[in-house]
Length: 217
Image (cartoon, rainbow, N blue to C red):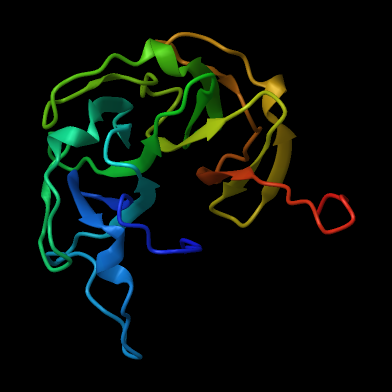
């Protein structure tokens, strides 16, 4: 779900799919929806949309895979396409791998990555080098026997909180500032203690909104 106030001429919808494909379409192309919906991206069988962001055409994007890899490149290297186009390669994946997160780069933020066995870390945005689109990327978090596969990556600030969600429906809310800040090529620390049959399914950043009286919701 992406809330849109107005369909500006200078904004774009940037999409990423599980197979590493990315696509950039002018926001104005979505300004005339039909009751039955309109096509946003052409998906082949077995593929799925994993992230959608609003951009200005000149920002850096990051794609994270479940193998613990990440690629960062300029969206200027992705041409603008129509709604029915399939897109272009954003990251090259190995057999059985998939993209799990799309992040639009902002300065003075950190990325919190998490793995299926409940480990994670925060890493400064500056630690992720810019590369050419379509490469294999670099290590974002180690995915060994202890950590398991990567399950999520979110952009966070110091005063944020995150919600950790297990495959058994357990929800754990924790402050971001309790998660260590370390480099890319590291294993991270324990985010949540899981039972033997339990694994971390996903994580989300908690966003608090202010009502008309200035109170948090």
